[in-house]
Image (cartoon, rainbow, N blue to C red; front, side):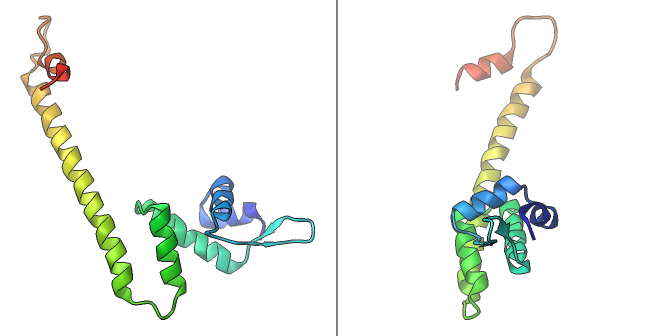
Length: 128
């Protein structure tokens, strides 16, 4: 498969596939004229990476998950630990976003939104 076919099959842009190749996540074969030749295994690996990235795993985590995926003697505890750490990071981000949302909702509620120049939103943006 060429890179265009692989991109269509995996849903990844060719630029992303090239990047994954540059950082060593996939290593396609090369034809005599130097073109990339992707095997089914490469496409499967790229699909795995795409899904992991959709779930927000970092490139480092993707590299580790990919290595574990390829290792048939792996312990699922290692995979679980990576996923659990990532889940904790997501929970922290959600908590931070909820705090931001609550603060902004409070400012919006306190603003009359009328013709007066006094605006609690602008006051709130000045600082605590």
